[in-house]
Length: 258
Image (cartoon, rainbow, N blue to C red; front, side, top):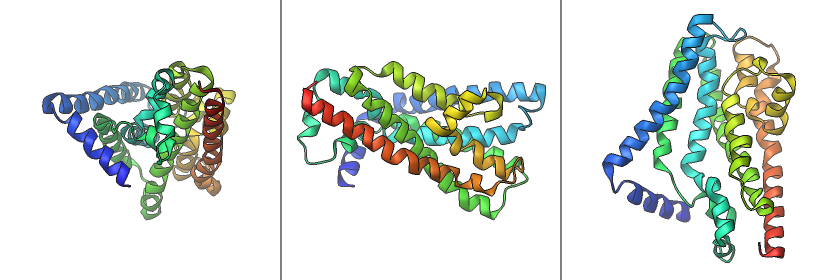
């Protein structure tokens, strides 16, 4: 916690040094992502729904995925630049420190401009909740757990993809394909995709476990109450996998020195 607070303060001071650029970056993040959703909104206004999903229901799927991604980029942006630590040899410095190397990589940079993504996701989500008729007290109690699971899934996927740099040296393209592309796809209902791709986003990169399946039950499109367990099963499955791959990568790095 002390390490987090120290890095948090240092990152905030360095990024807020130029206040105008700082706030413009946050606003730019909000507008950029909001434009994506507005395009979808216009399509839905024309065709009324996406495979039976209304605009406000898609908004909830969208906001859950984007909220988790935004928080991940806020506190875990270091994984995105992990290949630089490998290529420059700076990762060696992290290994000899007493703190966890994984935690140090994650907290290399607290990226405050990513709060724009979080705020945008919150706005879209609040709008969707106001329009949905199924929202009740149980949903409000369940929602924080759903959002936390979204953050954790994003973090776990990023750990696995960052660890690829232990073998490949560079992993920028892997991150774009394995995280950004799949997360963008998970903002919409699974039924619009081919079964193979839906399977990937359910069992391999389980973004659908925190967005599509829980809302499938809440919107009344399925009576399977076990879908509410999907986020927890996804996180439970990804936790040992992500740490195993990360530790396997560190062992390889330590044994080869590259």
